Image 1 (cartoon, helix red, strand yellow):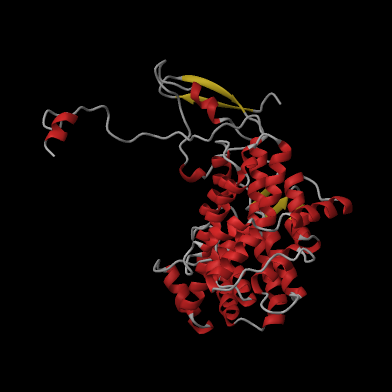
Image 2 (tube, rainbow, N blue to C red):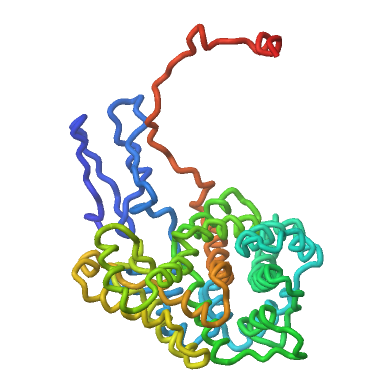
Length: 437
């Protein structure tokens, strides 16, 4: 449309510039033409933490934070969580469409074929101390897979790229389970390819001496739903790292390890562990009002509430809350749930939180469920990394095949000294420095 433009007047020079608007946005590079004089670099956008900067065009995940909407490839997250398996959703994220029955059968077979770890990877894991953090072990082992599969460097070969993406999706549950069992001093359990993706993971985690592990179907389905909810979330911190590292044409294992490292921080993937710590600190339902007062007074933070994107109820939180009821029907009610429900009730009614749009997010209930299922808090972030690997890889491949993408290299606003020079006292020569030793 002819009026799809933005006119800017530079009051320094009185010059006017007309910039095209595409998909509701202007290109930051169009700002470079706005200069004081010919020697000026041009105007840049200054945006710490990318609060209002789009770094890519993507067709994978859509979020409307104000309305509480999350869709994968156009499908509402609620429908996918209710009606699909995780591997169906993984196929959707990677390929753009849900699989047919034949495509799903082939996809599941392909994943099963790659669940085993090379023996050298197992030996690599053995080098970690028994109390090494599972997430640190996970990051390191994923990165080390690049040495096992040197063909992963062929990132522009579509067949090689897809093979290594499949390997990663198949192997991250095995790596996660082995990291967990290593921390407990238990022997590793090989994958059982007769089981579903979630059931096989549970088998590798918890099988002991029984000849065949039988996962509780309610628990297996709950884990599958949690995997679906965590599979992708647009351009979050770890996805941004995946794209940034991948833009250098690094292999998918190195890029995924970098993304997992970003995920490991308490402000990202580690947030649900922080929620449990908060609930432990509160102690009981009766102590919730006093803790809320501390939050209002700025003495403590309310973990699991609020989100950079969502200014409404996180749609994933609703699904997790329903899933929690199914899990607790099997495991028994987690006493932390009563504290959480009371905290949520007050936060949703109190003007302080409503005004700030601090609604429960995906982390608020997920840690309670994981703990009820038998997971230790230090493995929570690893559980997050398993499904998010699919999202990372979808983002990575989309970036590689986008002709507009180049190696990531943000600009800066320099705030240091102007040019200055060494004083006579500061000057020395390498010869004199060596002679004085």
